[in-house]
Structure formats: C-alpha cells, structure tokens
Image (cartoon, rainbow, N blue to C red; front, side):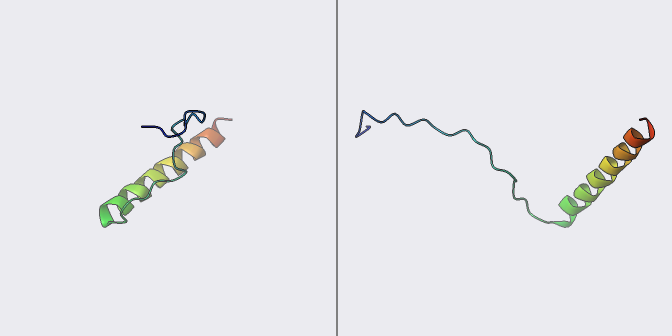
Length: 49
C-alpha cells in the first residue's frame, strides 16, 4: 500500500534513447545491410530533388 497519500506517483513510460544488442556476426551483417539500404535511399532522395 501507498504510505503517503498526499503524493501521487505517476509511472514513467519514457523509452530509452538506444537499445543494447548483442554484437554477433548475424546482427552486424544485418546492421551493415540496413546501413547500405539507408545510404541507397538517401542517394535516391538527393537525385529526385
């Protein structure tokens, strides 16, 4: 039970800035592939301006 009824505690739903993940070969390969996809998208955006 709550000890102090004058103070109302609100739960925090704030998300962390970054998430930790295990740096395995599979995750690094996925990260590299996603980075390459992001770079290709950026090139297309610049080209279509």
